[in-house]
Length: 128
Image 1 (cartoon, one colour):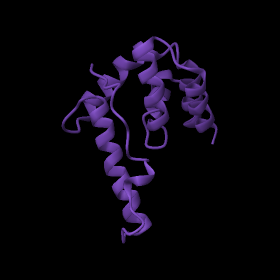
Image 2 (spheres, rainbow, N blue to C red; image 1 turned 45 degrees about the horizontal axis):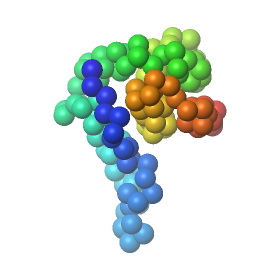
Image 3 (cartoon, helix red, strand yellow; image 1 turned 30 degrees about the vertical axis):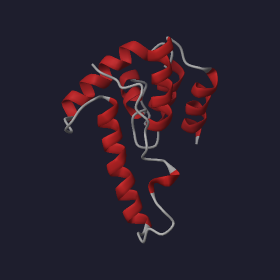
Image 4 (tube, rainbow, N blue to C red; image 1 turned 30 degrees about the horizontal axis):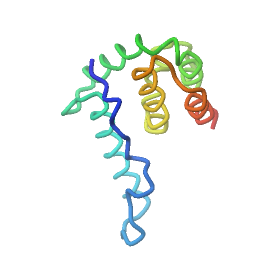
Protein backbone atom coordinates (compact mmCIF):
# COMPACT_ATOMS: atom_id res chain seq x y z
CA UNK A 1 0.00 0.00 0.00
CA UNK A 2 1.31 3.41 -0.95
CA UNK A 3 0.14 6.62 0.67
CA UNK A 4 1.48 9.93 -0.61
CA UNK A 5 1.99 12.10 2.47
CA UNK A 6 3.38 14.89 0.30
CA UNK A 7 0.25 15.23 -1.81
CA UNK A 8 -1.90 18.32 -1.26
CA UNK A 9 -5.63 17.92 -1.82
CA UNK A 10 -6.95 20.69 -4.04
CA UNK A 11 -10.63 19.84 -4.54
CA UNK A 12 -11.71 22.22 -1.83
CA UNK A 13 -9.29 25.07 -2.54
CA UNK A 14 -10.80 28.51 -3.01
CA UNK A 15 -8.68 29.16 -6.09
CA UNK A 16 -10.13 26.25 -8.08
CA UNK A 17 -12.44 28.79 -9.71
CA UNK A 18 -11.83 32.35 -10.76
CA UNK A 19 -14.38 35.09 -10.24
CA UNK A 20 -14.48 35.46 -14.01
CA UNK A 21 -15.42 31.80 -14.56
CA UNK A 22 -18.86 31.66 -16.08
CA UNK A 23 -20.10 28.42 -14.56
CA UNK A 24 -23.08 27.69 -12.35
CA UNK A 25 -23.12 25.97 -8.95
CA UNK A 26 -23.99 22.57 -10.43
CA UNK A 27 -20.98 22.79 -12.74
CA UNK A 28 -18.76 23.84 -9.85
CA UNK A 29 -19.98 20.87 -7.81
CA UNK A 30 -19.27 18.52 -10.72
CA UNK A 31 -15.76 19.92 -11.20
CA UNK A 32 -14.95 19.70 -7.47
CA UNK A 33 -16.20 16.11 -7.49
CA UNK A 34 -13.86 15.24 -10.37
CA UNK A 35 -10.93 16.89 -8.62
CA UNK A 36 -11.81 15.03 -5.38
CA UNK A 37 -11.73 11.67 -7.16
CA UNK A 38 -8.36 12.51 -8.68
CA UNK A 39 -7.05 13.67 -5.29
CA UNK A 40 -8.12 10.36 -3.77
CA UNK A 41 -6.38 8.38 -6.49
CA UNK A 42 -3.22 10.50 -6.19
CA UNK A 43 -3.10 10.03 -2.43
CA UNK A 44 -3.00 6.27 -2.91
CA UNK A 45 -0.83 6.45 -6.04
CA UNK A 46 -3.48 4.78 -8.19
CA UNK A 47 -3.70 5.77 -11.85
CA UNK A 48 -7.18 4.53 -12.74
CA UNK A 49 -10.19 4.14 -10.50
CA UNK A 50 -10.38 0.60 -9.17
CA UNK A 51 -12.78 0.28 -6.25
CA UNK A 52 -11.36 -3.05 -5.09
CA UNK A 53 -7.79 -1.75 -5.06
CA UNK A 54 -8.83 1.49 -3.37
CA UNK A 55 -10.78 -0.35 -0.66
CA UNK A 56 -7.87 -2.74 -0.12
CA UNK A 57 -5.46 0.18 0.32
CA UNK A 58 -7.80 1.96 2.72
CA UNK A 59 -8.17 -1.25 4.75
CA UNK A 60 -4.38 -1.66 4.96
CA UNK A 61 -4.01 1.97 5.98
CA UNK A 62 -6.62 1.46 8.68
CA UNK A 63 -4.32 -1.00 10.43
CA UNK A 64 -1.58 1.64 10.53
CA UNK A 65 -3.62 4.52 11.95
CA UNK A 66 -6.60 3.04 13.80
CA UNK A 67 -5.26 3.65 17.29
CA UNK A 68 -4.41 7.33 16.75
CA UNK A 69 -7.70 7.98 14.91
CA UNK A 70 -10.02 5.85 17.04
CA UNK A 71 -12.24 8.72 18.18
CA UNK A 72 -12.64 10.06 14.64
CA UNK A 73 -13.40 6.60 13.29
CA UNK A 74 -16.11 6.05 15.91
CA UNK A 75 -17.63 9.46 15.22
CA UNK A 76 -17.62 8.84 11.46
CA UNK A 77 -19.22 5.42 11.93
CA UNK A 78 -21.97 6.96 14.04
CA UNK A 79 -22.81 9.34 11.19
CA UNK A 80 -24.03 6.40 9.14
CA UNK A 81 -25.43 4.61 12.20
CA UNK A 82 -22.97 1.76 12.51
CA UNK A 83 -20.37 0.75 15.03
CA UNK A 84 -18.19 -0.98 12.44
CA UNK A 85 -14.77 0.67 12.65
CA UNK A 86 -13.61 -0.08 9.12
CA UNK A 87 -16.84 1.37 7.73
CA UNK A 88 -16.30 4.46 9.86
CA UNK A 89 -12.78 4.72 8.51
CA UNK A 90 -14.12 4.54 4.94
CA UNK A 91 -16.47 7.46 5.75
CA UNK A 92 -13.40 9.54 6.58
CA UNK A 93 -12.43 9.35 2.89
CA UNK A 94 -15.70 10.83 1.65
CA UNK A 95 -15.83 14.14 -0.20
CA UNK A 96 -16.75 16.06 2.94
CA UNK A 97 -13.99 14.56 5.09
CA UNK A 98 -10.99 13.76 2.90
CA UNK A 99 -9.22 17.08 3.33
CA UNK A 100 -9.15 16.80 7.14
CA UNK A 101 -8.54 13.05 7.19
CA UNK A 102 -5.57 13.34 4.84
CA UNK A 103 -3.91 15.89 7.12
CA UNK A 104 -4.25 13.56 10.12
CA UNK A 105 -2.99 10.51 8.28
CA UNK A 106 0.00 12.37 6.87
CA UNK A 107 1.07 13.41 10.35
CA UNK A 108 0.66 9.89 11.71
CA UNK A 109 2.63 8.28 8.88
CA UNK A 110 5.38 10.90 8.96
CA UNK A 111 5.81 11.31 12.72
CA UNK A 112 3.99 8.42 14.41
CA UNK A 113 1.39 10.72 15.96
CA UNK A 114 -1.11 13.40 15.08
CA UNK A 115 -1.03 16.95 16.43
CA UNK A 116 -4.02 17.63 18.67
CA UNK A 117 -5.11 20.67 16.67
CA UNK A 118 -5.17 18.65 13.43
CA UNK A 119 -7.21 15.90 15.05
CA UNK A 120 -9.49 18.49 16.63
CA UNK A 121 -10.21 20.05 13.20
CA UNK A 122 -11.37 16.66 11.90
CA UNK A 123 -13.48 15.98 14.99
CA UNK A 124 -15.08 19.43 14.80
CA UNK A 125 -15.77 18.92 11.11
CA UNK A 126 -17.43 15.56 11.84
CA UNK A 127 -19.71 17.28 14.36
CA UNK A 128 -21.05 19.66 11.71
